[in-house]
Image (cartoon, rainbow, N blue to C red; front, top):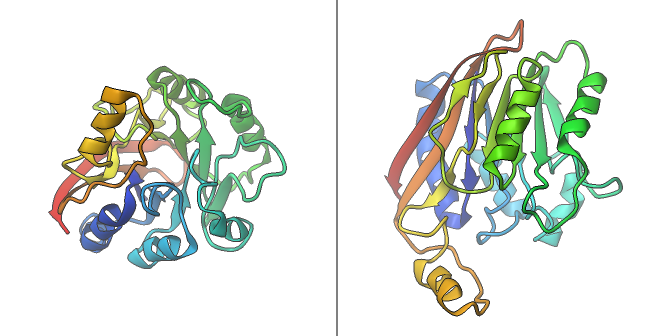
Length: 258
């Protein structure tokens, strides 16, 4: 089967790009499942019920998130409902939502890294170890969105889980990396998928606002860049459904006018 995983979608430009390109990509590449990181779809930070529905209407099957999942409080009730939105598995016990979802014996898991984050999260390595003991033996295909800052932490998790999951796909830094590969044990890996957002921007945000923060060290309210050209970054993984091992991994990038 083929699984498409879309990098961090940034605000309305990112949502417009998904709506513009996703139907043709799904049809032309015979995609079976679409996963998208949606933690920045609502004005560049967080996700709302309406923006989640917009992604699902475009054909997204599972929405993953990260450290901004709590930014828009109206999404909280949906995290415990039937809408296929997941938050990182290794948040402390008691928070709303779930860390993974299983659809047709395919498990999509969300994890968050600990290195360089101000918050204290539970261990993603041991958290995944525990989940692997709890999943049904019928679940062979396991896709992980690892939302993390450090390239070394992402690589370490990929090596740690090699042969035990189908894919470890990094998100969060918004800059796609060139190391897409199938590891020796059969796990597809990339350090970061990249973003789906304004091309002429600084990781999706307005150039001048970001530059002012760096030049003055005075906090400024961040805003999504107002740019008609949008880059769509995704990863396509082909998985053997019987073994759960990946057969190939391919980077997909489109620049579109929205």
